[in-house]
Length: 172
Image (tube, rainbow, N blue to C red; front, side, top):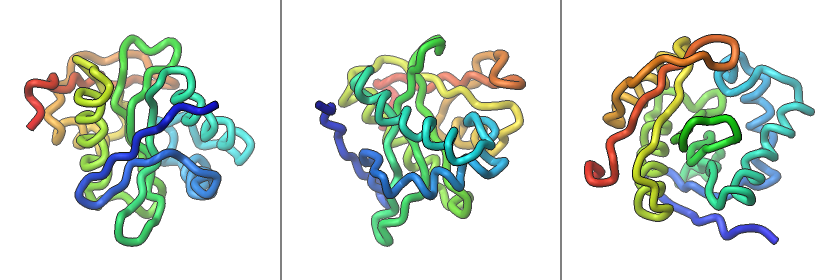
């Protein structure tokens, strides 16, 4: 039995459930140093476990991250969605792009749609994004979404900024 994972769209992207076909680009992502703030880099076996967690999150929480598919080409471009694993202080909006997909605005577009879904479809009243201090591109995404840096916390093997997103009343 699996939960019904809703499908959402934005201007250029489809936010959808992960499929087996998404593993190869995710394995490439987790092999790349760019994945350091997402628990990488790592080999294929560990990448598989991380990849499987996304579907498991939906099963256990009733929400989770989506695979990002470019509408026109059908290409898998990354991940974005709702994230609240054990040990997190509160629900998060997360995003990451696979190699070759940076600099196109996909992360901002996907995270904005995920935040909207969090508020409108899942009833969230607040959300944060935890961004490694060594990841200026993701800091810029959080700021483009209107999130405000709230504090800095220990994270993985370094530090991360916690960005607070505007509430549902500020979405527009």
